[in-house]
Image (tube, one colour):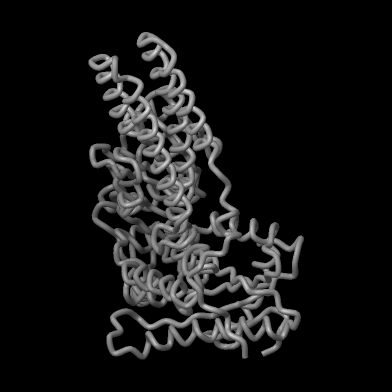
Length: 505
C-alpha cells in the first residue's frame, strides 16, 4: 500500500494562489515617486509631497482596515447567531414535548404535572448561565427557573407582559423586558396559556471578543433596530444607550456594509433576529503609527533641510515596510479561525476553489470532511470552555497528521475539512488506498489520545466522509456535497469511521 509522503515543503501552487495586494503595488510606486520628487524639488515642494503621501497612504490603510474589519465582523456575526440559535433551539425543543405543550392549567392547576414539567425543564436546560429557563402561565404560576428580575419586571401580570413583549420582539428576542437592557430574553408561546422564556446576561453575547481586536481602540456593539446598545466590548458604553452619533450615521440598517468616515471606520452585519453586530474603530487609531512617522519626517525636514533627501528616502522605505507588514498581519487574522488557528470557512472555500479551478500539473485532489462525534454531549457535560479546548486539540491533531501542503479549515462548530493534494495516479485504486491510509492515521491518532495516561480532556472520535475530485469544472460545492453524503454514511454505520464517496467499504 502506497502512503502519502509526509513533507513540510509548501506546494508552489498554494502560494501562487494568493494574489498580490493592490495596496502594496501602489505603495511601491508611491515610494519611488517620493524619492524622485525630493531629489529634484526645493524644500517648499517637499512639504506638499509629504502631504499627498500622507493622504494616499492614509486612505489605502483605512480602506484595507475596513475590509479586514468587515471580514472579522462577519465571523463575529456568525458566532453570535450560532449562540443565539442554540438558545432558541433549546426553547423550541419544548414544543416537541406533548405533555408540556398540552398542559393548560387555567384556574385549576395540577401540582403533580407542574412538578413533572419543572423536572423536565432542568434536564433540558443547556446552559448553566441561563438567568431564566422556564414557563409562565396565564394564571400566574411559573415552573422552571424564573429570575427575580423577570418577576419584578412583570409583577402580577407577568404573562401579559411577556405576551406583549413577544408581539414586539425580533424573532422572539427582546432586550426591553428587564429594566437596564442588561438581559437578552427569548420567548416562545407554547399554547394560549403558556409562554416559555430563556434569558442570558446580554454581556455574554460579546464576551471573549477582546482577543480578536487587531487594532487598538476597536470595539464591538450589538444594537437593536433603533440602534440602542444591547451589549458592547466597551465598558464605558451603558446598555440601553444609543450608539455614538458618528457611528450610527455609518450604519446601513438594510444590509451588510462598511463605511470609512473621517472619525470612524464602521462595519455592520445583520443578525438573524434583526439586531445588528457593529464593529468600529477610530481612524486616529488606525493611522496612529503612520501619523507618528509622518510627524517625525516633517519635524526633521524643517530642522535639517540639507539632509532631507537622505532622510526622506530612509523613511519612505521604513513606512512602506511598516504598512506592508500591518496589511499582512490583518490579512492573516482575517483568513484564520479565531479558536483553532486554521483557515476559517470563507478563506478555506476560496483557496479550495482556486486550487480546483487552476490545478497543479499531475496532481489529484480529495476533500475529507470530518466532525467530532457526540460533541454536543461534551459541551453539555463539561461546558463550552472545555469544548473549545477539545476543538483546538482536534484541529492540532489534523495539523499533525496531514501534511503542510494540504489545506485545512474549520467550517464552523465541530465541522472541519481538509483538501488533500495527491500525485496523479493512473490507478484509481491507488488514490482510494492513499485516502484510506490518511483517514486511518487520523483515526489512530485520536484513539492514541484517548488511551494516553496523560489524557486531561474528554476523549473524542471522528466520523469522516471523503470525495475524490472528478476534475474541472467540479468545484468546492460539488466536492463538499459528495464528502457530506459520505460523512452521513459514516454516521449511519456507527461513527468513528470513514467513508469514501462512491466506494463500498
